Image 1 (cartoon, helix red, strand yellow):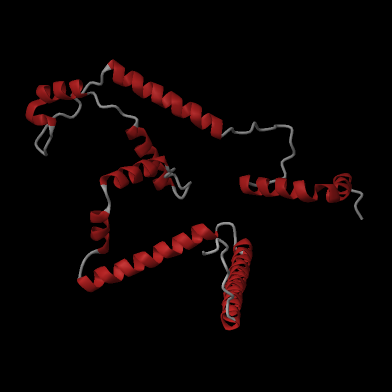
Image 2 (image 1 turned 180 degrees about the vertical axis):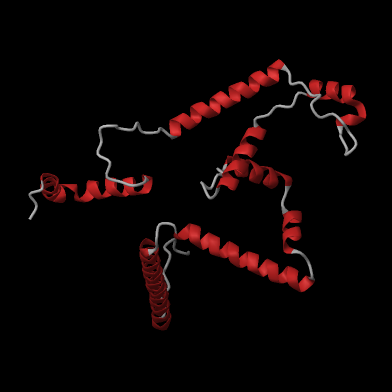
Length: 237
């Protein structure tokens, strides 16, 4: 009659040693992997610290300068490519610009202040003329009425005799007067002529010499006040 008690078969000693050796190898392999990952993380951290230190030492506008330099390099390469192909760079560039970019550029251009300051009377007069003409709103009804009235003489030639025949309207005269008054008022704010003092001593021969004397008095007046008084009294040594 068979017994219900199971009998465990003993594991051979060689198999036990092989199993223990395999487990040890697995643990060593995992340890080497962890050691490698730690070294790799330490290396990456060190590289990131070095890069961050470099970024902190760079100027605040370095990113903008870098982007500008990269754009300039790209433009130079594009110009060389167009020159090799016998094409015009500006024409190729315009063909690549979309309508939205062109509209955005025009809006940005209008926001800029085109006035570079005073460089000459001719340039100032031209800017004034352009500024005034931009304010003019054409009256198309009056334009068509005059065109019908003058006929072929509306666009005069050397044979046309229309000099002195034009009579400005009252509204046109009023607009001109208002514009002139605005200009006078604006100029009065920028320039104010100083009143002349009749009691002041005349120690100059012209306007330029007067300005020089005022400047000298402002800087050296307190040092020469006593000498000046002695010269006026005649007691100077």
